[in-house]
Image (cartoon, rainbow, N blue to C red):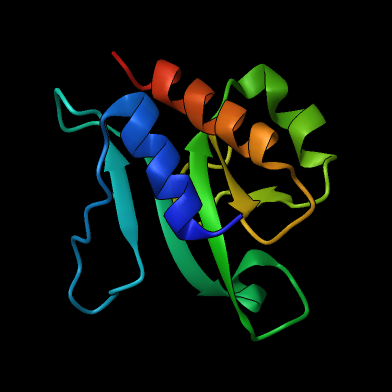
Length: 118
């Protein structure tokens, strides 16, 4: 899935625009609830080695919040990795160029949106 496709989905379903908060990290975008400051997704471009992969190539990931009881089953899926820079019990990294379908990524984003709605 391309980042633009993900951002279009977030815009259409959650009224969320990507926010680029860090000038030194121009490829990092936060998705937050339109009526507050809570994040429900972060899109980053990080070297694979920082994700535990055997490549220095930069990889687009989406970090989303999950229910802790789903962590084990989700981590068995190819393309889902421990969260990068977030609590690894409550968040996971999803490879946007990985084997997950758009529908699966959309469902994870929607779940994250629900879990962070307060």
